[in-house]
Length: 618
Image 1: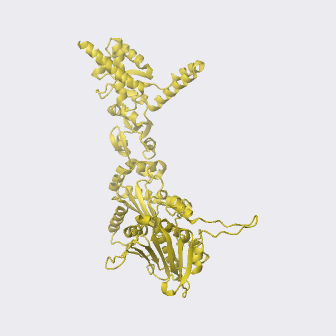
Image 2: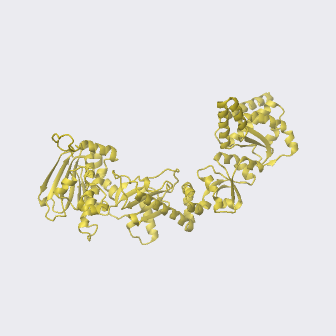
């Protein structure tokens, strides 16, 4: 709180910081807390801490012997607990000194692990919605202790006075706020009740709410009537599974594909992971709902699980996780790292169990989340060996698992890009080659690991030479008859570093096949730029090296009627135009981005062929 001014001190003497409470509250609201709504969480936390300390005085008593009562009628918000209470000395220690925490008090230091709030700083959050905080408390540590009243104001002033025992007949604390006019959004009765359920639904002490209207037969409404769902007993495992799934649907708003129970006794963590019923983009991390000792800490705690586990959303309650200063996220320490690793192991175990005993569930899971599993398999040898045969891939036999594909193809070829696969898929399939699309994330790396679990299968990258070798050559007479056309075609396409060859392949409806990998195009572009920039002798040397760069190949299909007609064209300009048109059509079928020169060629060749056809008809 703001301290009175001190007289001048001699040079070198110690001075005391002056605390501007209004500035501190502004700092809390803009930089520590995400929303004014946290005031109710802080009051609940203070009450829970007080109850925990009260139980330490009589540890044999039941956990629900004492409780928390909330009241809000639009004019005040009141939180009352049956906790340990405060003496007048405690009030000065905990409420009148900024930064002093009940957790640091020597008398309860041994119970540090049982507390989740900091009474002094936490209580300041109430100034986000009120200009005055009224506290009446009576200590349970001293049977004949009087009640004590503390009033703190937003200007930094406060008063303390003792009250007769009748002002607070039983030990505990009552905190009353008179909301500011601009805080109605957070202090209306319905909102207070909703916030209490939001933050305190899993608290271990009974919490009730009363709005002063005498509803529910004049009884206060329970905020947390049921224990955590994983703490309840159920008649059968199936009933338990359904109950956990229903809770996951209530919390997250979707019906889980399955629920995974999480239990880490070492840190007192229990909860569930809900498997999402729909795929999510790779790397997109969902927030998880984390409670600490029953109190909701965060709904967006991404750090509780590793990046690859984006196929689940979790709700957990833990004893030993450490909140950050705002108590809205988790502090990154060794405990959190160990918890993250242990939860990741639980998810791996669930996948392994589904693979071993529930292939239907595994199939539904992989159909939706195959990308997440591929991400995991790349870095986890056990999961890779277990699930690689089950994972779906795009192949020349359609979408198939590697296990199915390996049964018919002992040699598996894999492309380096999606566009390369689309270029060759139809022709490779007709030629009996087994090709897998390796252009998607993780696919190429995983396919190359297939021999680790299927030693009888070999895997190799697909290159143009491999496919060309499986295309049937034309007879020598046909080759000689087409030589003039092929020479003119090569000359027309030299600007694209493209060679032209004549082969026969299925399907006959495909007039041409363009073999040109992304790496080859990049290498040619890089060499061309280097040559242009260097010039002179170095340009000549680089030009010679450029001849070694991989060239594209336009393979014309002799089985196609259009190609058979084209190779007989005797008019040079028409031959060049037809070759350019065949190149453009093959480039478009590859579905790769067209370079400006290629787009220009396609437009020009189309117009030239149209003009030739019109001249012929006229």
